[in-house]
Image 1 (cartoon, rainbow, N blue to C red):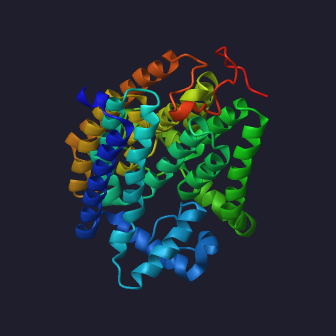
Image 2 (cartoon, rainbow, N blue to C red):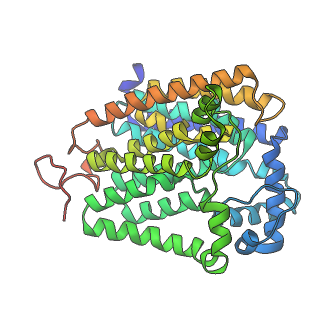
Image 3 (cartoon, helix red, strand yellow):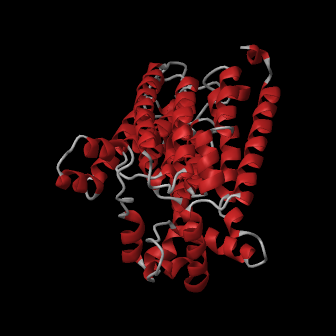
Length: 409
């Protein structure tokens, strides 16, 4: 590719321009299109938070609104956005700003991650792919949930830990990811595994950053309304729609109703445990490839999800680019068309037959992308760190001249 001869500054500038154009596109959509029902729900949540506070919001019934299933940091965000809306700013635009801004930084982050593991040309393509992803434009610019914010913090934690030798900051980023939306909890064990393999000082700094931020954000809620927090956030299983993935196939193939009910109820924890186990195993085998492990784990969570929501497509949209350019392109094109058509219909949770079939194709494309991406990840030399500027060695890389997967003490 012609851009393989570019230096890092020129390549980074290209991704920066693409990310800025992507942010502008998202914000134009946010400012001019009402968005789905969730925008109205978030407005209701924001007003409730302004009345009850970000801590006690979990203990109060919210008539006319769905269950408030957002982690504590989201409440503080909604409180700030509600204050801005009272100054005359459009809440519909404001609620879609955090995810849109997160996509801007995610494009730059994916570029930095990939350039350490592949050529500059591939890194540019992956960064630009995130910037112009139809999945992310639809879910961030139109829908405006907080998934994209959580994902960028999860990828940042992996990058800081594996590539930047900054375990304290990585721990803070990891805690931020689950404080915005609880979804990235599946990658937290893998992050701790890599910190452990980096040696005791790395583990202590990572745990300190994670623990301090977690205590600051979650502590007051855990002390005040622990039971309501557990019911609303920790045990939330998603909606009962059968639009995507395993429950869609189970319904199409006529599996007994109790089986599907179990899958969407207590059974969904089994799929979460599978994702955690896979992430931990990959992190142990290839600690230097932690960003790819995080991308694969989040993609697997979407693959095995028993909940249906177009915004959930965000979970894999950026991370799969870390696994491979072609995998990212394929998934984002098919899933992006699914999202655009799904949002264009009567309701974001009532897909036409064509969109249902397209979603099934997207699921298969995601499955294939995860297989090829993980195989490529495992094909890397176990002890070989990614390329880093100025010869810096990632925390997960052995500090000896011989490649090894042994923990550094």
